[in-house]
Image (cartoon, rainbow, N blue to C red; front, side, top):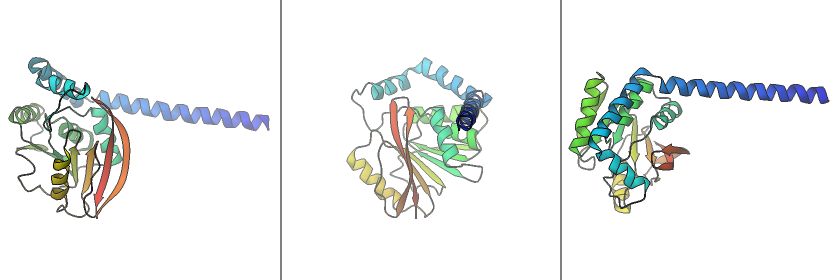
Length: 223
C-alpha cells in the first residue's frame, strides 16, 4: 500500500514537472520569436520617442479620467492565449475594432498565420501600424483601415476582437446593434464587457493579464 502510494506520488510529481517544463518551453519560444522581438523593439522605440501611448496606458492603469478613445495595448501573452484557444490558422481572418498601434493584429499574424485587419479612427495610431507593418514586410497579411467602425460596413471575417474597457452603455448598445448583422459562425471576442447580441452563444470566458491589470475575455459564436 505504502509502495503504491510512493509510486503514485513520484508519477504525479514527474507529470507535473513535465507539464511545467512544457509551459516554460512554450513561453521561451514565444518571447524568443525573432519577429515578435522585433515588434517589441520597434514598439518601445516608438513609445519612448513619442510618449503618447505611455500617457494613455498610465491613465488606464491609474484610473484617471479616461475617454472611449483611451488606448492601452494588449500584451503578446494575450495574443498567444487567443491564438491557441481559438486555434487560429492561415484560413482565418481576424478583425480588430479599434486596433490602436496594430500590436494585436501583428502578433496574431506572427503567432498563427491568420490574415488580420485593423480599423482605427486616430491617424497617428494608424500611421504607426502601417509603418510597423511595412518595416516587418507584412503588408500582404496585416491591413489597416482609417475610419470609425460604427460608420462603415464591417468586412466579412472569421473573428472579431473588441476591447470594450472604456465603452459607455450607449456605445455598447451601438456595438450590439452593429454586431447583430454579422454572419453566422463568426467568432466575437470582447474584453472587459460582455455582449447581448442576438443569436450568439458564449463559448468561453477567462481572466487574462493586460497592461492595466487582470481583466475578463469573453468568446462568443454567432449562430
